[in-house]
Length: 281
Image: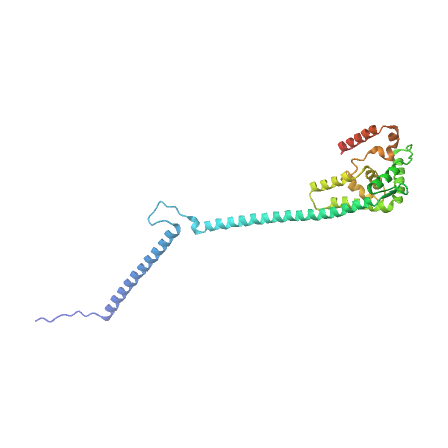
């Protein structure tokens, strides 16, 4: 019987074989893990894009990666800005309204004082008859304008002479006149300096102009020609307060006033002067 031959396997060969098998196993596990990760990533992408697997007809929804969020943020910023602008506009209107209400309250207070100042005038006719208020004021002005006046001088000298007569009238009625004209100045100054729109400014100025009687217009004209009334000149010109002054009643035109005896003709001439002044302005 032949002897059995047994191949001798060295320990080194065994170790080498074991290492190869271990390496192959590690590679297999690595590929398996990589495939699993790839499947998870692909599934996540399909989920985010809302694309069913293997559906090539679907387009990529880029908003899923931030564009939609950016658009939403921009829209939110625009809405916030529009809201802020609306709030600012509303606040400006409220401020304008508050300023107007404050102005109107001040105007009404001064206007009441203006009426009270006119009511302080008195004119004694006799022991039993006394005029008060505007009637007394108009009577005083009528007496003032009916004075004798020399028209033989040239216009500038006539004006100075007329102002001199007014200063005498003012001194005689200083207690009432000073308050009357001072409050009238405060009224027009308030209108001119108030923080209101120009439309309202014109409306209130016209209200004052509409309250001025012919006597007040004449007195106001001469007052503005004095040093005391110099500040009033600007507002009288700016608001055209003497627009309806009948020129035939003032001293400088007394010569033509006395020539035209008919009151209707005098009124017609006054209306013509007012029309010419209006067209000139």
